[in-house]
Length: 124
Image 1 (tube, rainbow, N blue to C red):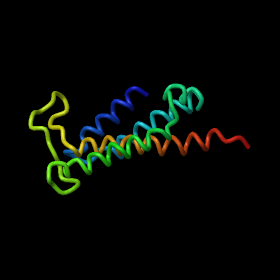
Image 2 (cartoon, one colour):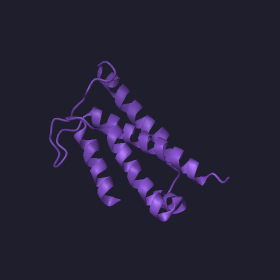
Image 3 (cartoon, one colour):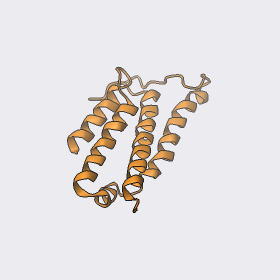
């Protein structure tokens, strides 16, 4: 699980220069939690998460929406890329597209895990 989560973060950070990003990284992170659920049970995975995955959806939407409207405060059209001019170690340049991808990452994890955990917790 830690290796898959680390790989999902790599995909998230790689995405604003190359293919990848929030969607693919979120899917890989979801796979890590699903595999944990297969081996340890859904209840153990829910305890590991600490809160319901449904709560990640509005947080991710909020972060993405903020990155979309942030350029409006600088007199630019929405969704214009804003970049910090200094490079950060291991990450490189940070821009508003990274925050959009982080929001997508959280939404994807929230949606996938909510669907799968809802299906697995239903009693027939």
